[in-house]
Image (tube, rainbow, N blue to C red; front, side):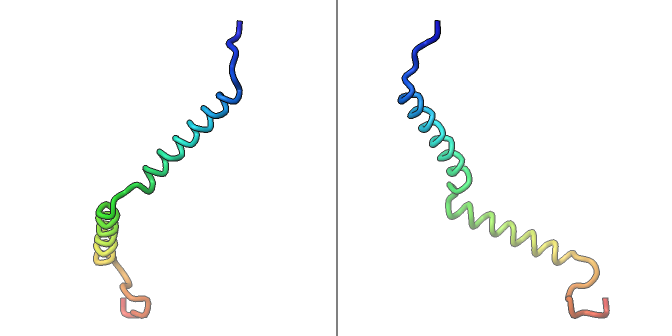
Length: 66
């Protein structure tokens, strides 16, 4: 025989689980410290500078000699 389920409690439990899952995802996306954000920004800037410094061909859009 099937178990009797209280739909009100079932809906509340389901909503709570969905809310907890969304909160966990937001913590992963946005829950970084200021130091983490600065480190990532610094690493990205260094990588961009490194790539730009080792680029072949035209370095300037106005440079017609290369």
